[in-house]
Length: 217
Length: 245
Ligand SMILES: Nc1ncnc2c1ncn2[C@@H]1O[C@H](COP(=O)(O)OP(=O)(O)OP(=O)(O)O)[C@@H](O)[C@H]1O
Ligand SMILES: [Mg+2]
Image (cartoon, rainbow over all chains, first blue to last red; front, side):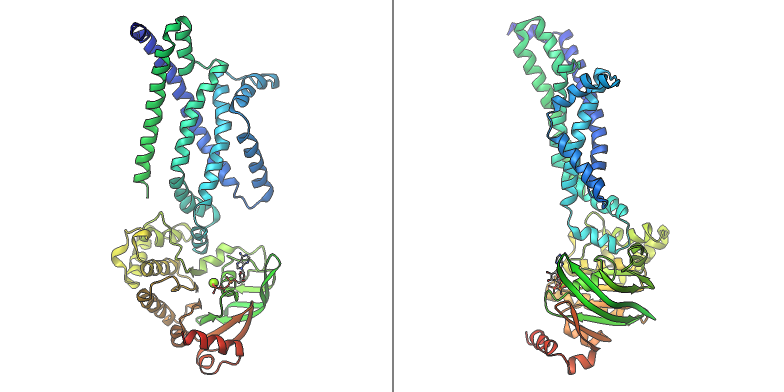
């Protein structure tokens, strides 16, 4: 019991929250970037120009089948060899964005696929161009159906940010390690604290998703 | 002048020969009904007219443009040729009014107040003046189909294509939709090509009836003549089946 009281000192708790802020910052930036890039790639897979859709599909497949850790190592250790120097934060965000964009592209693609072909035919017959059809008719319906898989992907993203601990990203996980590194008795209290933090953030996200799902037509 | 003209048109789905040597001329203002057994190519034929299906040979002139030519701008044809589908294909994410106003806004750049005025008038015409703010999923099949017709009319097209517009409807809904279609057919400028199993509608409204089987046009005759005295044995057999059932 004493361990818990000591572990949760004001200093340690604020230190954990600083880590949480980094986790959130990296996740949110990666999330926004990968949402935009992933949507774009997902739509491009429907391009009528065969080599464009084919190439994009191939690259997405490769990325989706690599371990995220490998991509993180790549952006941090390999890019400098190619004269591209990123900060830890930039390396983490780049790696997460590349990986998540590929995952989201696939979600967007199957979301678009799930909109009945009649919606496209109705719009095209009505005189809309393929881009207008995609923007006004298909994507709004696809995103509505994609809310559950997108949210699980966002939740994985937040959790996966902790992988960047390995390149010393000072995130929530890393700060917890620093604290219990100084005193072994703090291991369990720290695990408990960060579990609660991850849970609260991710659970809030799923609540927002449920609210969105009810609000959208 | 012909609104729609097929000259030796061929259509393949892979190896399957779906349309064989189609020759057909539909004058501006005509109402033509297309009938034939299931799988005979009626949908395929009607969908070539607005480019939803490509054609592989011959010429297909619609509103003075050749759809067999890959360079033809489909959107220019679709501006002038509306289509009503068996399963309505209303935009599920938009209200009834938005469904009707979207294409005129995006494609014709019609201004908002005029767009709204026209949409409201069309809704009244199809008997749904109070449904403007409903979503498609809140409507019955017959109501959806009337909205779909209003949506096509809002583009002020020269021609309208109907692919079995009443086949997915409960019997008591069919009459309302047919009445709206009869009303449109009265407009002497509107060209209509209708695939339907409603022989009463064909008899009453069509100028001509086209009978298809296995991707070929077997008979093309004025409506009265076709129903009184079909020439082709296959057409006779088909008529006796649909009329006696
Ligand atoms: N996309 C497609 N790919 C391959 N074959 C097709 C395709 N669409 C239609 N067909 C084939 O072409 C033939 C004609 O089909 P179509 O849908 O035009 O017939 P239909 O006269 O409209 O029939 P129904 O009365 O059942 O609607 C059928 O044999 C059908 O299987
Ligand atoms: Mg059909």
